[in-house]
Image 1 (tube, rainbow, N blue to C red):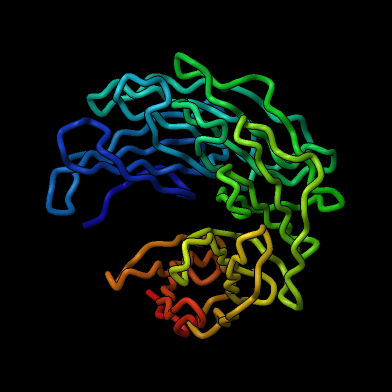
Image 2 (cartoon, one colour):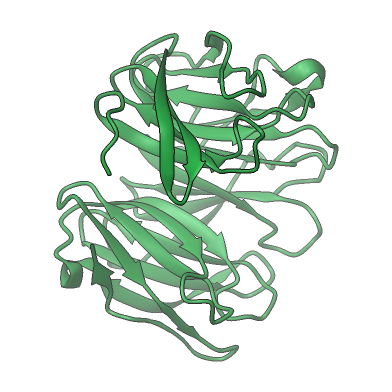
Length: 315
């Protein structure tokens, strides 16, 4: 079954938007449209509703109840406009008009956005990563009452990198506080900003070098080997590979497995997601390939002392 949505879809979120107990789908489209597919059940959808964004170039969306009214809202990042937008949900499958919350100073290009509870309250916080020639690669927006975000955000720099591409959040040093991990495409490094539990992160990041792999452009976190310590998986666009890094518990990592993505006809690995796809209790990895128009699946074969990934299956 095919459904017509906005042009150039870039990101997808799933949730019960109309509160009928059936999952719906939200799609960000680079042409400046948010497409909402209302679920009918059985994998089918009743209809598609398109909402114009406040600017073109939507690259990432997060579906969450940010105003505490039990209805799902959509927080969107626009690469072209270098801004953050909010579509407040009405709870019946419809949304209010988008409005721009904040515009990150140019020149910048937003690549990724995550949400989490960075300061241990009940309000959802957001972190945005962008390529930026100033010292504003990472912008942290703490949640505020009424569905608002703290403006302006607090900026953190990944300098000398000017091409940070992806971000994830995890307590990598196991001190009970959320940390931020950023992938730097141009330097082949990761920047780790340790959090203090109050929504503040260290201004000077710890650096993790990634060896000979080139062009890290997506990063996800999960406990791949079952030792209750956050691990990382990183995709590399230039060297066309996926690397797994096992956490040591103090904020450092050990590279354990590098799998070439060209085994699944991959030419431009772009986005990683971690989930237990085969129900064996271990998180697996899915990879979206921009160049080959494919999705790759890597099944994790992990124990506490050994870690590996299958060579991949493509669809």
